[in-house]
Amino acid sequence: MDSSVAMKTFDLENDVEEVDQIYTYDEDAQRDINNKRPWKQDPHYFKRVKISTVALIKMVLHARSGVPYEVMGLMQGKLEGDTMIIMDAFALPVQGTETRVNASSEANEFMVNWLNGSKSVNKPENALGWYHSHPGYGCWLSGIDVTTQSTNQQFQDPWVAVVIDPNRTISAGRVDIGAFRTYPQGYMPPKSTSIDQNIPQSKIEDFGVHANAYYQLEVSIFKSSLDKKLLDLLWNKYWVNTLSQSKLITNRAYLTDQISDLQDKLKEAEMGLYGRGNAEKSDNDSGLVKAMAKDALFNRSGCTHNHDKLRASADTVSRLNTEQTEPMQIGLVNISHNVSHINVLIGLMTIIRDKNTSRGEFIFYSDRIIRLLVEEGLNHLPTLPKQITTETGEDYDGVGFEGKVCGVSILRAGEAMESALRECLRSVRIGKVLVQRNEETGEARLYYAKLPEDIHERFVLLLDPMLATGGSAIRAIEVLLSKGVKQDKIVFLNVLSAPEGLKVMYEKYPKMKIVTGWVDRKLDERNYIVPGLGDFGDRYFA
Image: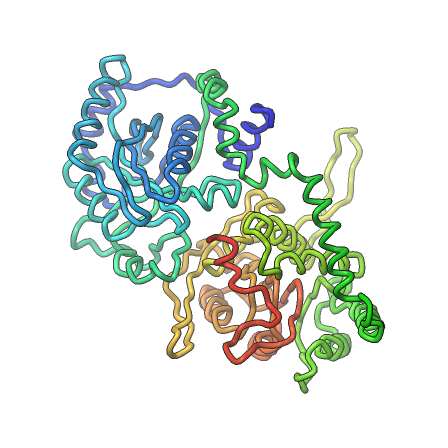
């Protein structure tokens, strides 16, 4: 992989902003703001963290090198108003475990010596905070993290905590990072404050206890013209290979192998469907596929509630499940109805359903299906005529979306669909809802929601790969409705659906659109989708 291509891809995926101004460090200005200490009067004073690309890459590679254990390091920088600017970072010699990392007295001594050494070579930036990794379980603060951050804010504020998930970074091709500050003891944060990340079920109790003890800062990445020479030196073959597991960096390199592999899998799927001794099944399935393709539920003029077609198509889909006696009457877009997609979709589904499929292949082919879902979902949002002028000076009559769009993922599996949405709508805002089902009562419980403030003005793409009973989706939709989002402005995207869940969705939200990759046969006695594919979140993120 050419290092320049890798660097450009890294910059693109992480929205790196190029700045041309020469970097300066005004010691008098830093001393003045530290003397005034405005953050003491306003616990929510700091709102943004800007991180240089050099510091970011050093932190990511350090976090990656420690997997599966946590690592810790220190960050240096300066203050500009309510923004903390991180210019550099260095690793601390600490021994972490898979779930925690603590700085020892030796690490503290190392930190002091490093900072003194920095000043001796005319690098005057103060220590502004610490970073550590959460390999595989998202960016948030545990109870230990909250205690550590609170102690540091008490004795050496201003101080910020940065968390990086190296596993999610490699899977998504975009740095998974969060910046946090704790509130002073006794402070009651606004009710709207919540933490924007995925929390695995084993961590929910710890998250719930401490979620209101801190808030999240906006993170942005920048690169100055003076950084470029240093980045060219740093971005060598070793660094490229370390980050090259990003799907966006490696797609070009192994695309040919993946296509060849997909062709083999398609042949296997075709033999499974239409192999010897299955002539009768082949005829029936072929006729069903043709009928499904013919009974398209949504026409291209935007009419989404032609109930005659809905009932006809629902009857067709219901034949997939011989145990189902009532037809499904749902506002459903099933991309398997698209005859141009059906063969490749069967092949993709075969791969991700296979229990022997590796995690890397599962992610790659799931992303391919999700991209189809997102593009189909966007295709059903209303548009308005839009005239633009091309480079040739000619006018072109095109279209643009009628209103603003955002995504909302149902954690944690829904996060797997965010990258595809960002690839289609680069600046799209994405909210998150954390819903977990009580194993004893089966009730879906809302743990937190982080949504755009103007979500009531937006069309919402609701993201969750699996629709089984519909319990989690219903709880998430209730949150959206309570924020003023209208039913007919919600498009629910999922990879697999069970007929039972679809029926519940239609009965409760008849005006909502659903875009699914495949309608499976049924739910079993454990409420698992069958034939299904297992736990999507575990297979994608584990």
